[in-house]
Length: 192
Image 1 (tube, one colour):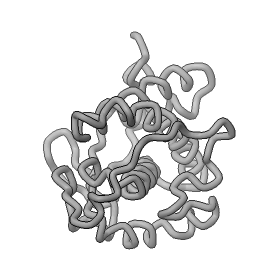
Image 2 (cartoon, one colour):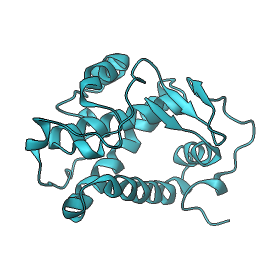
Image 3 (cartoon, one colour):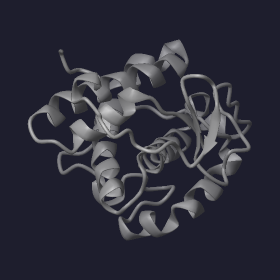
């Protein structure tokens, strides 16, 4: 999968694994992810999906931290959460929000199968054991879109590894090394 990586991602990683500031950053990251993906949705469906996406993305940050604790790199851990989101989008027929084509779902699952299986994550159950105790808000599906899926925001051909684009547009397989000094003040939601 193709993702971006910059100083804000490193700062978010550090803050999400740091007490106190982590909650503030998590809330801001949920808002950011919901906003980004709602912008990809058909305008007539945006608001009805908001609460679902907020709940879903909030749960994926538990997955992110678990993946980091399991030894995945920042880029790999973040990719895992994006794969989860794409499973959820597919299950709801929200193909216009997907980041990779639906015919790559199994390939992305297989790349992280060991982690997914350990945590009960499947394409049909994208949160697995990270499903929150208080649930995830329901949102209407558009299953008719699965008959002839359109993926205007998807980039295919990146299913064999995590591809990271830096701020200069350079593409690196596997991601970048973590900087030696990371300031949590650069994380979304943190006031300097």
